[in-house]
Image (cartoon, rainbow, N blue to C red):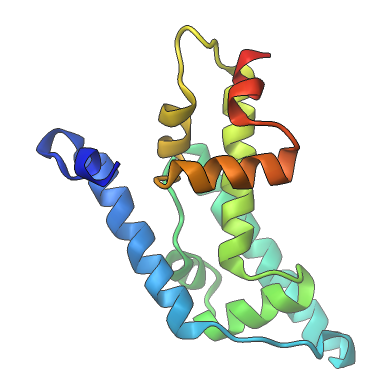
Length: 156
């Protein structure tokens, strides 16, 4: 798959791959854990709610145009540091922002597959449109979340 994405005719896929690699490196560099969310004051929980709500709105709006949002762009849009974004998502959503974005993209793929005609669309094309370049991992995640293979969703 990487050879296809790196070909000159597939600049969009190569750009998506570079952005995802960059985001993965940032995620690894800034991974934090916080299990004390229940002991936070109400003001901190409300701040986490606001940050997550604003980040969700930004991400959903970006995905409407099929432009994949990045963690850095989320931080800039919401006006917080990456660490604060991490803490807010751990507190409010009990997941990292990267996991949230992945689930949001999985849901968009499912919607697109349900609306597509199998004769006009492929699972690979939809997955790649939403930034899933490792197709076997995508298929595993999709099956784990939706309890069916993406090809079954497309066929139905």
